[in-house]
Image (cartoon, rainbow, N blue to C red; front, side, top):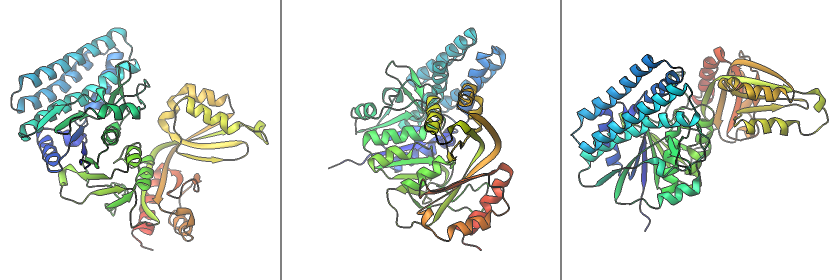
Length: 448
């Protein structure tokens, strides 16, 4: 008989301090978690990024202050726990590792991608050590083991945003003991040379999903600071409601187009193994939360509305491509070369318009390469609003409701037809909140 495996992931706010860790430990025990994946203590990754930048600029004094604050917080937490000489020594080794990395970066005044990934890994490694001690002290009758995710999550060597090697991860997971409760790190892995890699910001959800896939888990749980996936961002629209059940396809679209509660890549491993995903709040554990499943009974036209802020619109035009071929292939090849994802696309015979995150504009080599293909026009100050639902292009009255709701907005671009699960349009950033509120009222709350 197939054994039930539960993989539970706890985010940074769930690792905020001893009280939060105790609460997370109780949840993992109640849910019979076999694998617990944790993020760094809230705010730690941002501090480690700043430490690395300060070190690379030779700002030793500022760097030392921030390193001290990171150490102090983790040491204070360790001091609150029952004394374990081995755990204290491991934490001290992590501190030494941080000091050595900072010294090397400061000496060379250079922050390599490899060093950047290594220094960021320390956040999860320190938090998982502390949490394993909390859980071990509560779970007296079961073996709790601190597992180094780098021995399991094998990736390529694309530092900063490594690609996991699915077959290697599945092979590593076969060695896990089903009698042991494992505590491990999200966000990090290693390449075949043993170098530490990271999966990118927000990658802890993805790590948990990869472990769930590798273990052939029966359930993947994502525990965060909100009580599930909402119909839109409650900070933008106070009438937003928690969705109790949603399909893989809908959740994947929501994550891709701005829903902060899930990493965009999280759904894919769950889909490959048909693993139900639960999203709940560590702070309100008894609320029903959100279940993400392969199929759901209720399939409304519009399930949710998401927003991706800080969007830029790139328009690449080349009149010489009139009635010629290869223009779009050249452009997409350039996006692939620089590993840049596109959110929304519209095309004409001689031009193509795409939306990207504003941060993409910092990649000057990419922009220069695009200019080698055609004239590049850059517009900023936009947000991408996405309606996520079902059979969107077959709902005859939907378009009228949408355009009546946003009739005063300056819509710069629209995209519908590639997927029946989303309808995207680009608006000025300052108009985005009002658009979302009106759309939510008309399409989800059902008001006229």
